[in-house]
Image (cartoon, rainbow, N blue to C red):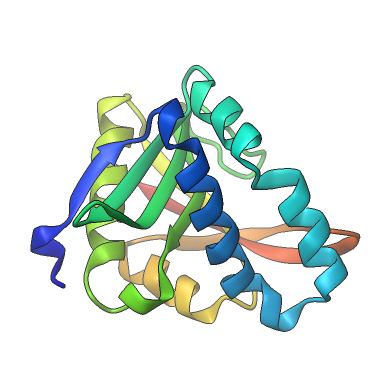
Length: 175
């Protein structure tokens, strides 16, 4: 598969069940190997059910972009325009709250195409920067974000289940 055959579209509430299943699987792949099963289960139960995804998709301002290949979900990005972070001192930032690509599609252009769509969406919303947090142990993700023009601007915390973890805060200015 090349990124050329990829369809990227905005998610609708009707996509909630498919998104929930994909998001849970992607989260488990990313975080499961280096965390306790109890912490992963607690986090998944709180954040990845179909009802939770439907509620998120219905939130005003939240944008979820789906990357599809032949109708199959292979990645997604959740953006929250006008979402600020204390360490991001810009007038119109946009948060990338989640960004996941199916592990079997890594290195095939899906992530780059999805990020380009996220940048376009943020610019269309009048954002002057994108920011996100990523787990300090997600070396592949951190390398991808660096290639996409994100700079490491600090550290923040992330509660995974009952365990407090360190995330890197990344910023990309949109000129």
